[in-house]
Length: 130
Image (cartoon, rainbow, N blue to C red):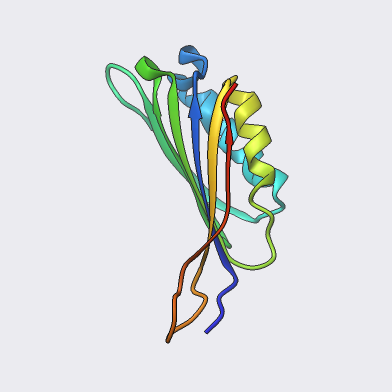
């Protein structure tokens, strides 16, 4: 089995708190991030929590892109799972700029690599701490 799946785990720190609490901005940002990677968007749904925070998912033909924000901490967690020949790292810059994040951490995991041996493998791990 070789699914050519990639799982990008992103954490953004010191983000603009007003942006993290704006459902419309977060929704458009994730849609733009997905489009930057050339994926096919199927549907999206976002929810703003009370008193603060936004969560959402963009369902794509290649899998999904999701976010959860904590405005009170200036933090956002993003999960981008793709199949096929997609470059999910392109979403990193779009989201970082859109959230005005000063720092980020990214881990890219290759998944579904084998049925008999290690199935997951860390491909990249990158930090940008200023």
